[in-house]
Image (cartoon, rainbow, N blue to C red; front, side, top):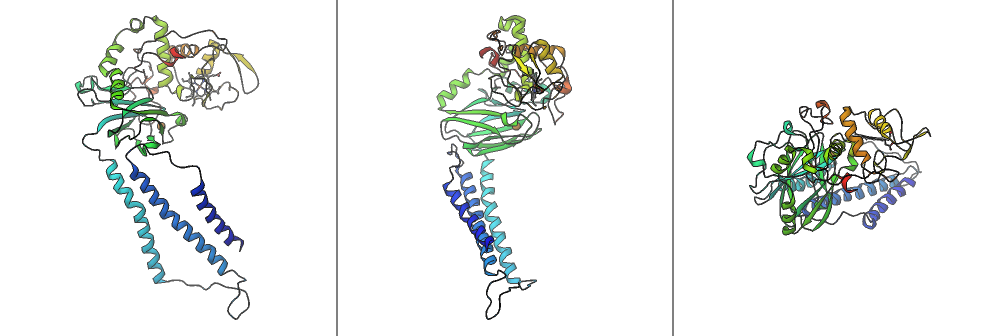
Amino acid sequence: MAIAIALVVIVVASVLFHFLSPWWATPLASNWKQMDDTLTITLVITGIFFIGINLFVGYIVWRFRHDAPRQGGKPGHRADYHPENKKLEVWLTAGTALGVMALLAPGLFVYADYVRPPREAMVMEVVGQQWQWAFRFPGKSGQLGTTDPRFISGSNPLGLNPDDPRGQDNIVISGPEVHLPLNRPVKVLLRSRDVLHDFYVPPFRARMNMVPGMVTSFWFTPTKAGRFEILCAQLCGIGHYNMRGMVVVEEQAAFDAWLAKQPTFAMTLAKAAAPPAAAAGGGADAALLEKGHALAQSKGCAGCHSVDGNPGVGPTWKSLYGKTETFADGSSAPVDDAFLKEEITNPQARLVKGFGPVMPKIPLTDDEVSALMAYIRAQGSGEGAGTAPAGAPAGAPSAATNPSQAAPAASGAYTTSNAAVVPPSASPKAATK
Ligand code: HEC
Ligand SMILES: [Cu+2]
């Protein structure tokens, strides 16, 4: 009896929760209402079965309980054994088959649409990497140049072929924010530089895996202006939760203005070829700082260490230098150059209080360690000293010198490259914060 009541309560509570719960999907901001419809169909079908089966089981448990009164007899119910029931089995098999078809078929139709972009769609390439996003648009020629992991370097993070004329006017966005015009279909091409990622913008109801070694694609039309968060929907490593970005949907004119401000690949290459000191006027310091910034990205430090004051997997680098750090064992030490060097080259030796022992030992040359230390120092000091020089150059020399370390994982295809990332915008966060 108690079990039968429990089953009924579970059904009623679930249905109430569904209708009263405050957790609803974000408002749709793309053309993919079909995705919502497909999910609704699935929910209704599974919901009907959930309610029907549980109430049925509840009824059976109650109706055939051991002490139920029997016709003319004493209590003491025993179930009869029916090894087979042809008619019932045919009904159940046919019903289940129909139900499964009704669950799957709408999805197949939507998927067929989803990967068949309209002819007039504009093209955007999205490249994922632990733990950041990059984007590329074709330039005036309307074509994307070819790419190859061999070409990946500090000034060419997406590996565009420098000899491909179609790539020269391509626009590479290395930051986490990309803009798109309102009400225009976009064909999205997806690549990954290391492991499985998944480009996912919930209000667009659109997502797709990014698989190393292949290009996947889908399309959508943004139908609402606004800022929409990009998430990575594949558990791609310890910095996964932090792999965020922003899509800004705006009127075509605003989009055009934004795009016109972004440097083309040819401009980035020219800048990289210029000597770094000349590029900034800031001299060697600025170059070192920029190298440190690039390394923090390419070596994956930025996935765990922020420079905005918010602790991530590891402590933030903002105002770290000069403060007194406390360790898990209760001891403490001032953060100076020796401290930083020790932490970076031998992370497991001491544990900063409040954090887990998860920082990997990342092989770095002495030069790289110095560059990273310069970058950390530039994030301000705990004593209020030390400001970053403004406007560090974009064209820092390629950073990674140990090829086997250039790519964090998986594909092995990048072993000949220097996988440093230098953003096209001239100033790293160090210069503005
Ligand atoms: C997987 C996450 C992760 C990555 C990647 C990572 N760190 Fe850390 N780091 C941590 C954690 C967690 C701590 C604190 C615990 C400890 O002391 O080991 C830490 C501590 C530090 C500290 C000491 C901070 C303090 O408050 O005293 C420095 C400096 C540092 N890391 C530099 C780096 C550099 C440079 C890189 C890239 C070459 C890097 N880390 C990559 C997780 C990471
Ligand atoms: Cu990811």
